[in-house]
Amino acid sequence: MSISYEKFKPADYKQNSKAPLTIEWKNTRMIRNHSIRACVREILNVNRGIDVVKINLIGTPSTGKTTLAKTLGHLIHTLSDVPYIVKMFNREDLMDMENTIKKLQPINHVLIFDDVSWLSAGNNKQKLDQIQKTFTEIRHLEGGQDIKVIIIFNFHYNLSIPKHLRQADFFIYTSIGSSELENTQKLVGNKNTAKLLDFRRVYQESISTGSAATPTNSEVPATFSFRLMGRGNNKFTYTWRKPFAPALFWNNDSLRPIIFPAREWIDKICHVCSEVTEKTEEAQKDVKRFKSEGSTLFGKGTFKQAIRIKFMIQGIYTYPKHVRQAMVWIEKYMSHKAFNYEDLLTEFNFSTGQVKCRKKLPEDIAKL
Image (cartoon, rainbow, N blue to C red; front, side, top):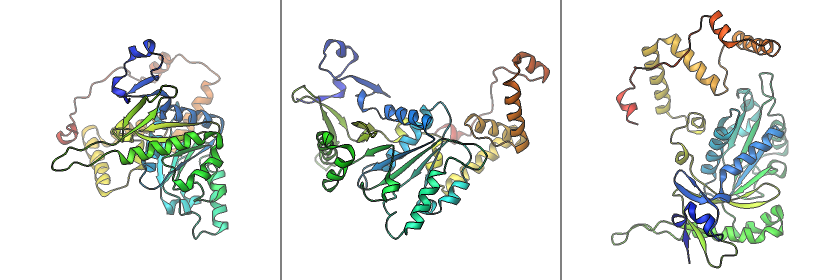
């Protein structure tokens, strides 16, 4: 007997104690314990206590590691109470970590290093030690302030990078090959062998149950199912990558299956996550057009000031040094002396209140 998620309704939970506790995410039902958002909250909680948190995403090629990394980055900055910037780096950036770090703004970061399985090959110990040293000092960025950093490494199997670089606070597996079972057992403990084997079954199901459309038959979407413990042959079934894919989350204490969507399914457009996209010529043209049209409508100075404020809301301070110094002075002063904000508004002749913008967007942009 197969129970698909469409059959579960909130009313069922109290009436049937055997039904799994499920939730809806954007009108799609899922088992609550599979929530990747719960994992991100756990990661953020650890990052509050320690400045640098490391996450390893491990799995064979084409199992969704890069997709998962982008989804993690997006959820980290959207669920956090403080701003984070998300950046993705390539091989050259990692091999030149000292200069890579120098280019970062002194604000909280999610740093994604995509596919670092090559690290051990052809790199001498001195170079690897230098990379490790840079990571230990990464939070002390130029700018005179400490920051929070979450580092994400993607690689193919447990032992594919040097030992000191694969140490992490969290591990997430998108697949576990037959040759990887023993290495993963050593990490998570033999007590979790049953969960590892069940995840291998789930992954195999996700890549083998579907079939492409033919002239005579419609496409059959792939699915993957989780057995409901203590409930006979009942199971909860997801459609693979529509929108979720399976993974396994290890926090150095407990192991549990989770599911994850693509970032675009959560939010189609995200300006913070645009940092992890490729810098194409078309993207550069979009930026220049945005600047030109905004400056024409509101004036160059006004539009630039509005952009500065937009960045400041995101935790990115672009004002000149003397303005930032004044902001620090104001914070210090106000920590010792309380002011009535209405009095300040009156004294500086500032106007407030809601405004309407009658400037229309270009037709091609408004249609997006």
